[in-house]
Length: 409
Image: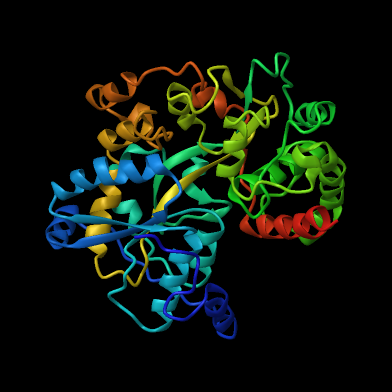
């Protein structure tokens, strides 16, 4: 089934949050590490509803065709619930929590960033459980992308699933001398009117592009504090918004309109209407080129100053009635077999979260057997000089500023 953006149980996300503002922030429910054999025993026969964004065709197929059978082999049924926006899943969790539901309809959510932060503030997520998953031992405990989610400490409230690196993409046949910095990309756009654009925030891809421009105009990623600071916003946002206003006439259709989503921008690129696109999931480009969706001359454009990187997670709502089954799903998704399968560009092409140094030779073998890509550099190259993501409050403020002063200006 397809779920449209709407309120669940008659309560919108905004209404639930507004209702919670009058009361102190709830204490999140926390569980300690459990013997996983007991978790497996409790999970037998449970059905786990995984609510996830439906717009990624490869991601849907991976969950249905690869992850679901692996979970079924352990006695758990996985049911993928598609949503048009992750906020829809959070709205359901919060409304059920407000209603005192203890056997809720959401057992796992594919989440990161603002939705995770909002859920933490509302006490929506079960915490402490993720660190007890056996396969978490195969990740690097010092990996900053896994320890915090857009600056919010994870604290065992979600299990890592895969990594992402924001990347610009261009057609080398049309951009024979590509720029190497984001400032250079903006200069190229001005010199080639109509051949570049970006999605309108709050689209996820358009939003990260705006943040990337912010770090460029302020002198680099370290110049912007990770946590939101109103004084820093007041100091830095004017240069950002002025840059984007000045850029607008050089964009596709003169900046009078913007793609609404990353998918719309990708289609403009595929149709040859623009010469660049952008993505937080560059590993998927290999398959898009192989299928002829993108030109054979499609190339990733690493930037000298680096780009934003993050990780996606699976969060377990405290209202879930299938906690044990959800833990089995999250642990299975972290297994070397599943991480390698998901990394295959013909399957999904997502960067793994496992620390290769912690794997046995047999566990590393599937990763080593993955085909090299003629389109996408290695994750090590893509993540060189990677910048940690800004806190969700930055995202909200910058999106609002863009809409009022760039789109509305």
